[in-house]
Image 1: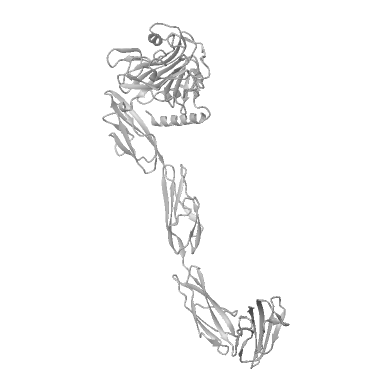
Image 2: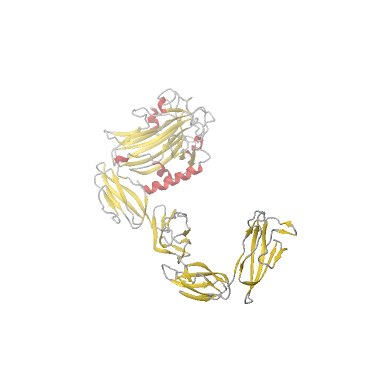
Length: 604
């Protein structure tokens, strides 16, 4: 047995099956002797002198019946007509193709019991040396002679063997196409809708589950011929199907793929199919059928003897086991262990460090080798699995830390990974803060002392102050600043650490004037005695003017007396609820002028 050869023909069968998508039975004629042998012969038999006594290339070939009810998926097909005739549906009563050759085969005459006129033979014969004491062949016989030919001349079909009989004497054209457990040959008279019906399937009508796919009027169920032999002795065998009496009403024999073979438990066999391993992996090889085993070559094996060895070759290797079986036969079997180099995992990233959130685009730069990468698995180091099966993922880190990134690759037989420790470094931000004194001051003491109280894990590299009055300065720790005017000034501190992560803090200081002024932001002129008039309150100034404008900028009220306010009317008409703009201008006792602008809501 050559398992690599079996694998090759399995691929070939799959190819034929793909061609049969539109018709369930397909046949191929004109095949070579090599293809014929590879389809018919299996374990433990050696074949020589293969010849064909057939009238044409289309009397024999291969078949594929995987989608049918035949019971045999594929194999060899021989016919007294053409193999193409076997394709259904069975829409004619008596398909016949006269291929024009007569025959006088002695084994056929022996099966008939007397010489008869033979037509359209297809007889395949060969010498065979089995490495066992029994070999088998599985088949289905079908014919157009069903059911009209029952009792008359019948086409002959058989497996005829000549050679040493293990019970004594010699086989001479011994037919082993027999009904199970009997000496009854499989013929149209012996297997039909009346006799031995358990082995027969009628295909005359559409009620048959074979009708659509097959032409023969009747077919047997799948049967197996069992042939006792003496191991390592030479036999001559004929597989024959012949028209008798006339060339009409053709017949076919479907023979299962590689079924002419020794039983698996009677010959030396490696149980493993051809296999492919990843480089550095191992497989256990198991042989059966003998007592002592020798394996070669020894490269990559843990032992060269024994029924079981472990193989871990560095390169693809064909291992052969040999032994003596059935007492005298030198037998061999082989298996191929293919070695697949692992892929080389690698990757890069467009950003290796930064402040959080840090979004990184990873690029797979792996080399697949001689196989195809079938899967990617990323471990980004932060527990987030988003996009972890993508080839080139993008991933965002939301917390500070040093993250180890792992890329795992899978091919059909190998896997590999790349680990880059602490590849991605994500940094925290500084905690910006500052204090200032005094907390309360006025225009006569406008100096404020600012102190940077920011903290950071890595070290602050830069501190920038924006003091709220247009003044900016750089100082990491202390800033002293005198404001030139009164008012509210919001100071801001922006700090940057050594990794360029930035944060800020803001506090507002108020420089008070020497006088006071209070202006409400709403009033309710509803004559309830509460907030009926909008007016400012304060003191410490020499002059006072207040103007009130509507939202379109129209002046609706003016007063130069702080004690005279607005009652919510204009020219004795009530103003609607709305927000109004007020402007107040004052001068203090030293002649300094101050301007104020604000809004007031009129609520009724």
